[in-house]
Image (cartoon, rainbow, N blue to C red; front, side, top):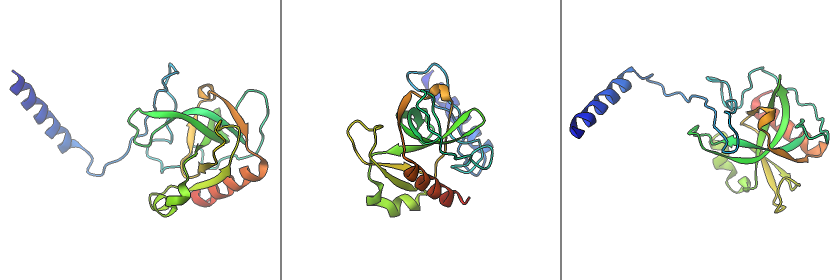
Length: 183
């Protein structure tokens, strides 16, 4: 019985491979945060190049307000899916850089020092900007913002405000973002 099931599974797998697109394409998929009961929007529209937003240009006006709602210029916490799109991810700080309608557009932060492997990161299309320390990191570690991967976030999925980046650091991030994105 087990042998027949294994044979049937192998046959079906072979058929699927024969029907598959010869050029592998990543499918944008939402990840479910452990603390949220709904799925988040995809990182990028299906078929769009990494880092692209649905609307073309991104409105990057600096306008943080201490009102409990996420605004461009603020570092917030949100569930960020891993690039593998395998349903895993983690809660991490995100710099809100703009909006696309009701959707927030953000860039993830990391406390890992990517300057140590900058050539390797660039070879893989990953670009980082140092932003220093801020209230988003309780341990006071220096952070970097990844400018080649735009995250699309539902404002309801943002956990809390972390801090506001000062105008000079926000402008530096946006300038590098535009350079990397070609705009």
